[in-house]
Image 1 (cartoon, rainbow, N blue to C red):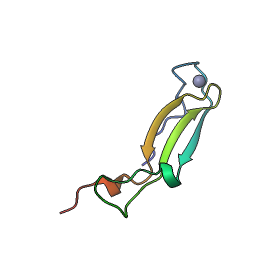
Image 2 (tube, protein in one colour):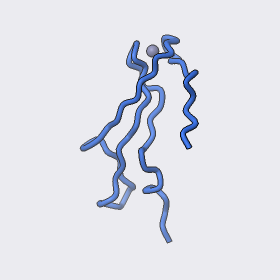
Image 3 (cartoon, rainbow, N blue to C red):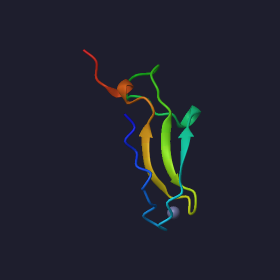
Image 4 (tube, rainbow, N blue to C red):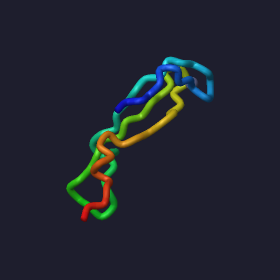
Length: 67
Ligand SMILES: [Zn+2]
C-alpha cells in the first residue's frame, strides 16, 4: 500500500534525506462534524532544510462518508 518513493527529493534544497514525522494530540485531524473520530497526521519532512513535502492522515478511512 505504501508507494512512497525513496527517490523523493526536497524541492527546496534538493536533499534526498527525507524523514517522516507524526502530528498527534491537538494537531490530529478529525472529520468535520464528527467528534470521536480523529487521525494522526504523517508528514514527510526534509531533514536538511525542514521543508514539509507532504502531509497526509494516518487513517484516511475515517474520512469516508458513511451510509
Ligand atoms: Zn530541503
